[in-house]
Length: 82
Image 1: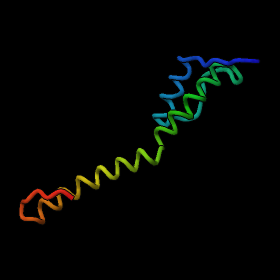
Image 2: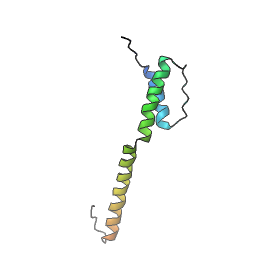
Image 3: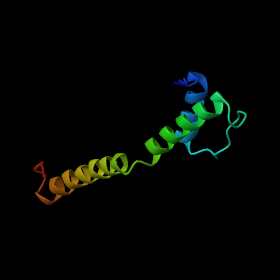
Image 4: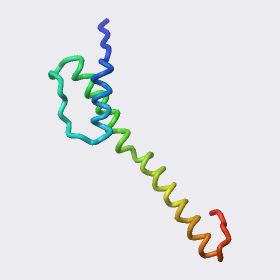
């Protein structure tokens, strides 16, 4: 059985590139352990950056703040929570 282990440094570099949305340009030789590790990190970083669940959480947080401000002003200053 063949076992492959990722290169932690290359994986972290790929993760950072994916999180920032940088172009898909792996700095390592295609087919190398480092390239495989970099791409694995890039996929994780890209998923983290574009994850709709994370974006929805941010949207709902902002909506909740807007509702609290609206209720506070429309209720004559009473800080009603929605």
